[in-house]
Amino acid sequence: MKKFKIPLFLQILIALILAVVYGLFFGEHVIYVSWLGDLFMRALKMIMVPLILTSIVSGVANMGGNDNLGRLGLKTMAYYTMTSVFAIVTGLFFVNIIKPGKGADLGFVSEVAGLSEAQDSFGTTLLKIIPENFFEALTTGNMLSIIFFAIIFGFFITKVPEKPRLQLTGFFNASFEVMMKVTQFIIKFTPLGIFGIVAKVISEQDDLVALAARLGLYMLVVIIGLTFHGLVTLPLIVRFIGKANPFKHLWGMRNALITAFSTSSSGATLSLTIDNVRNNSGVSNKISSFTLPLGATVNMDGTALYELVVAMFIAQAYGVEMSLGAQIIAVVTALLASIGAAGIPMAGLVMISVVLTAMGLPLEGLGLILAVDRILDMFRTTINVWSDSCAAVVIAKSEGETLKV
Image 1 (tube, helix red, strand yellow):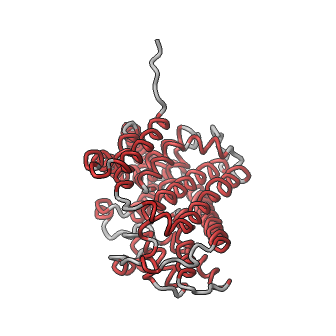
Image 2 (cartoon, rainbow, N blue to C red):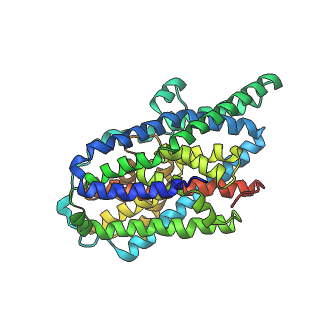
Image 3 (cartoon, rainbow, N blue to C red):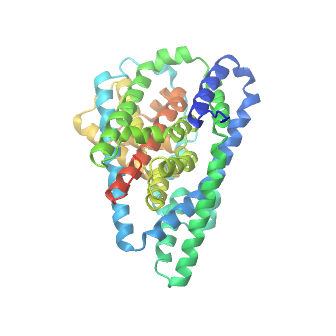
């Protein structure tokens, strides 16, 4: 008799529902289950750096030359820039139509601790892409530096004589496959991890009803904008530019997307994203191992849309009229900030503060939205990961690959 097995997606969904119930009704006892989430996040973070290093070195080394790397890099950055602009314009449209900041209660402004220290590091981010000490970058998890070194190392593997080239390429290919096996083992514990994470997040929300009444319209605008970008804009790009079936791809990404929603971390979800894109959508290792780690670090469609909505919400709350020129400046600043802020502590708030400064808006306004930032972070991270996966499909199809979607 064949043993019945519940699909992983269904297990994760059940865990998510149970976590919400537990967080709402047994919040004072969340300490008994939150450790499950802590362990799961530690496991995901444990494999993140070796996975990114081995996948990019392997991917670049297998491309085989300057032309392939240059072409793939250009396509990847063009896609990320295009989708980020679409996301920002979508947010701009909905925030101007619905105007959630009109009549907002300014009495709920809270202090944003540590923002000035984090913002000081923004100007030097691009410089720090080149690490002074690669091993320090590994231990601190500086993703931009790790990615830069991995691309350089993988590229120069193709320039050495055949024997060491084959040895090094084989070593990194094998290391990457081992990391994917570790990933698949950790994935088995996803339902338990998500239960612990979500139960803790729900239990930490003081008064969800009052919060929804105060910031409900603002939250609605962010969620509508993200939903439109995720279910309309990106599927259209996958369908008409990538010539693939976007909803078949979406179904194939279900485990990674629910994990992204629960963990609020593109980096921590990266291992599942690579697994789903390779095994369910059929994208090759060459494409997925280059585009996905890069996307998890620099492609932030959901965050770019979110930061623009926050800026406009604060402008409306403080009664500042935004001209068309000021809104265009906001779009450009949001785009540049979303690309340049990777690896900065408190990256989301730093990015928003850069946009606010460019628009001449008070930074204290950030305190208005802090209460719901963690909840909305779950939604925007899901869109970030979904966009990364769509990039892999579109670029794979443009390279002539035959996919499962």
